[in-house]
Length: 509
Image (tube, rainbow, N blue to C red; front, side, top):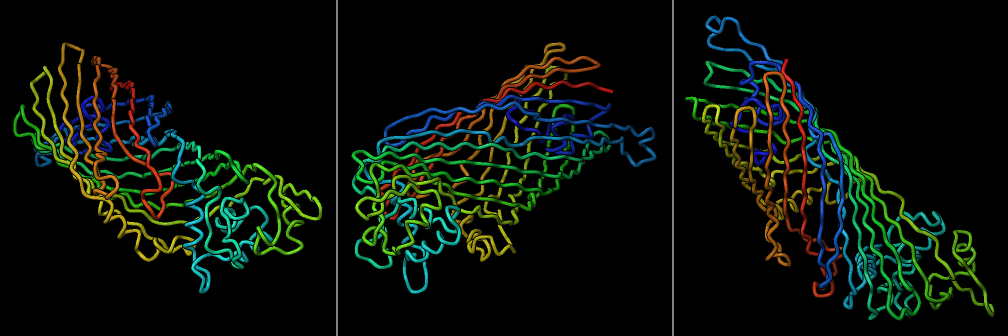
């Protein structure tokens, strides 16, 4: 199926249809066992402020493992025309998340510290529009360098400055204002979605094939983003490294059903539906900060509005380098700071998928097939009863955001096979429509994805060997941070190319 552009609705007997169109199992006349290891490589060319950097990631994985048990009805007349059927079990890996994105440039407009300052200014405490420095101090005194709140980490990491003369600190500003920030960003991801699939397909009069399926799905995803900044002609802080970690794990299930109608030996028409996958997900998110100083940083009421005589000792006990000169305390080094990991659980309903396809079969010479796949991304839904989950998720705002961000799409897939004796030559192409609505700052960006595929197979009465290669291309965008003024920050344009090599070994029994 991979070499055919991924289309499967009307093909028939293929192990991949255990998780595709289960009606295809009705075409089996003997049992089959197959295994498909795969090698995946992803390359990203990221352009950020007129500078381009490249990054790549590779992974060897088990793409598919499946077995089909076929049974033939010895007396189809007495069974009302039912010829028999097949039951299949498979393990399949649908998505590989291993990926690396890297970009950087000299930014003369802003620093990520400006984002930290805007975030702190937007937080509400009592009647204040921003978080007051007393909150930061309580966090430091109670929790040390593993803070409850990210704003405390930004403040005692010295990457946001209080308003001079303000007793509450608000409004805050980013450090080294007006200085050029040499930025380097790296995002690394690992994980996959996979499933154990169970399906049955039946054959009625060698004309109509019907199947149903059930899948137990699993998802795991980890991502670490790091932004490193160094300032030209730094006054106090020479630079910092900020990390954001995310770990997501989920389990769920979905249902599938389909049919294939074969009016004659030439034509096959297939339709299938895959229900949403209902996931239960647990998530953990954390942040870290390492600040580098260009010179000692004074600890006094002039630099820390919340200053008290014990503050230098509290900082020293928590790993800060503190020196005293002429009765004045100075920070000479800042330890690694972090935020207590934020953990939550929620439910995710993925989109429904409807697929229709046709196939033209030319005897032993081969076939041509095509699919159209409808996916209702606006039907995705998030929900949670966990009080640790975000308010946006619990009050339904996240679902409104989904509807305003995504659109429903139709994906197209076409492929063909040409047979020469025991050898089969295959090729295909698929088009995945951009699922995002047009967003103002990215109106010109087309996130559609094209995947080209080719393969070869060798088949005997006892076994078969298939090899396939797919190559996909897609352009996306990513903003390492967002500011109120859209002219003050930049986004990276990322051109991704992913190549998969799949080898399938199968035997009949």
